Length: 300
Image 1 (tube, rainbow, N blue to C red):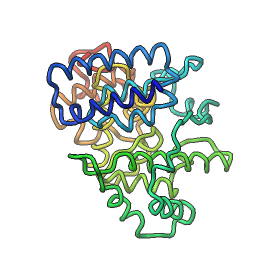
Image 2 (spheres, one colour):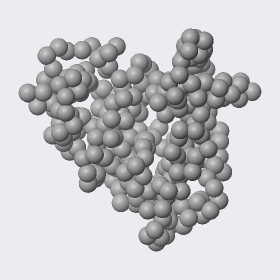
Image 3 (tube, helix red, strand yellow):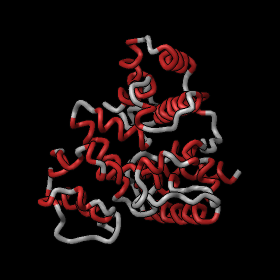
């Protein structure tokens, strides 16, 4: 019941937040909403863990801080590894990586029957050549004013494909890693959507960054990660570990890309974040910042 009331509240705020129309009463309500969610995050994080999908489904895409807050929740009996000291290889080998998060909603039911049938067929046979090219068009029917895509269906497809991929990896007695997701039907779908849509997941994003055949895709992935990092805390653990791995691991050649040096202020932000993550040695000497920062986000 409480979660349903919270969903109704977020749906009420959504049009104002989506269009950045913030008259004083709405701004006060929004600030109160952040405080309520912070209390829930601190005292009852399991609520946000179990209902993260339905909550994020109604939060507008431009509300980065609100989305970060929901996705920062983790059960009170769990201790997350330090993203600044643990390598991706060490994290991938943790037993907790094999545990599926609790999901209150059946995401498969959110996908239209016809689209789901085509999706299942491609995941099982990888035979339909036209499915990948038609998929973005199938997600463009939206009932929300000012939105090009059906966000609920798009989120459901991304989550459904991710769940199917993890189940497939477990059936083969493999662990989740970039090697186990590479060159699969599941990654075909994410790679296809990455051209025009956004997706999440540390292994997925890192693989797409590495395999992208156009720098515009790598720039888009970096922008998505970075705009969530420059928001006020808290930051989701998965966001931190993904960005740290991207700038620390030399296989991604992050610092060689032109978009890192497109403007002096952007370059300083990147290098400040790198130094705060103890990866300054991976940054070319000419890119070291003039002033060191103590936090992840320079604006904080």
